[in-house]
Length: 346
Figure (tube, rainbow, N blue to C red):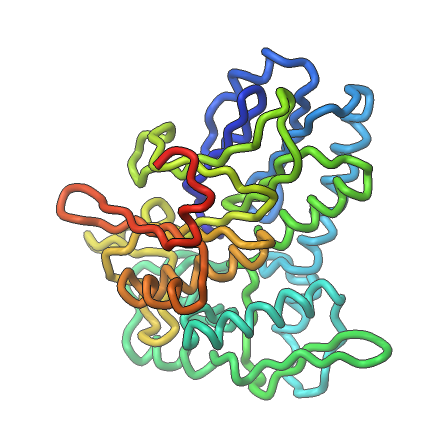
């Protein structure tokens, strides 16, 4: 999973995804906060204008939905729908939910747009480097091991099939292993937003891990705001603040999710082309899009590409993108023209 660098602020209600205190919530009793854990990360929802007596039922409904999403998408549960597809060694189309078909279809589209930098079949490499269900390696994988894992990857080996009776996934490579963790948080965020709408709630800020989506206003009638955190160990250090205007936002970063191996920092962001963790200077990519799922897909691809290719792609695809690069002992930032429209505080 991605370690997020986002925390979201409102004048009276906060979603702090980095473990900070919700110190302003008590100023307005109409602000309600729901929170819990899912998919190896945390979820949190801030609501405005919702009666306090609804809190218990909403909390239960949210957790039930996230638990069901986890049963669909998890690679850590051997009996999940995705795990069963990964374990299958045949080539016949396998039935999946419409939701999973949608996630894979979007991932394949972004994968093509990023020339394979965003690759949901990179699972064997993720596992090889110790960021999947397998344990962290005690030594760096050999080139032969990397080549063997790469031979089991490739978006061209995966298809989404839509039939009258339902959706299917098909692979033509028996060992293909699909890992949707890079877009799972965005999908879950959108799913919770739809749940809020179904419950008749139209003012909310929803977050799962590093993906966030907002609608309406906070408890004081002001826009929900999201602060992009500086890539430092100070969790309240703000890089920029944005008003999402009903959009989704997601950040992928290499700064915190890593381990040390023989004195070398091993990033969780794996380049499908080299089969190795990224080595470039880009440390954070934030994307604002119509949905959190789409933002969650693009940010990973941009992180893999590195600063120059990410900038070119953002401009070519008219993406709202904010990049943070390592520069000597400090950092520099870049934003696309589309991102500037959301900026409240640079």
